[in-house]
Image (cartoon, rainbow, N blue to C red):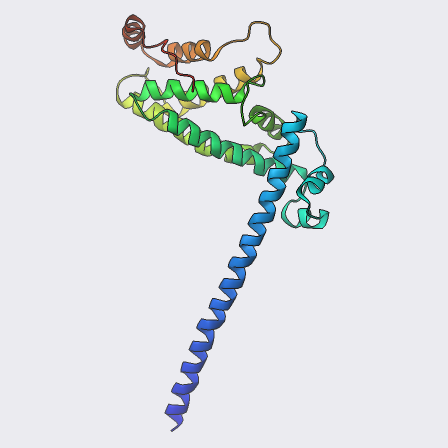
Length: 238
């Protein structure tokens, strides 16, 4: 009888535990969905303000007013404007990687790297027309105050560029060296140069940027062959 009571007790306890955990999980899931929706409202509000002002110089109160949520709610999810900008920058990076991947699916590794550099250059050029108007401004502003967070946000793009340079190296299309460092140099050259083209009378173009990178990382025989075939100057802007 004592054993039966113990079994009933244990069974009841286990059953209560399962349903209790399910209830908590459901509650947590609902809370997460609600939080995700509110966070997105703040991000969308900030994007709208940025598009209107063509600048990232806005206040938290402006974001709160545009989102139609409360200031208290804002500080539940963000520690301040810098965290909002970091979240926006992460979104920008994710969208950039998706766009670059989509546009660089065809061709050999150098063709794909060329397309990637063109798109990246466009994204970082301050005078271009795009639905990601302040990609470079995000990076430059945040690099000064939160370099580690910006580096982490750059990681998916950097990893993709490293993959392309490794593929090119494996195919014998690059000079001897570390594909990782070559990818870093291409990435830094493209983003930094593009960001300084604003207001310049004769800015460096994406084609010129790629030509510079191409001659820096490709061996002479590949450069000669591609130049003769007209491949190194093939328009690739998306």
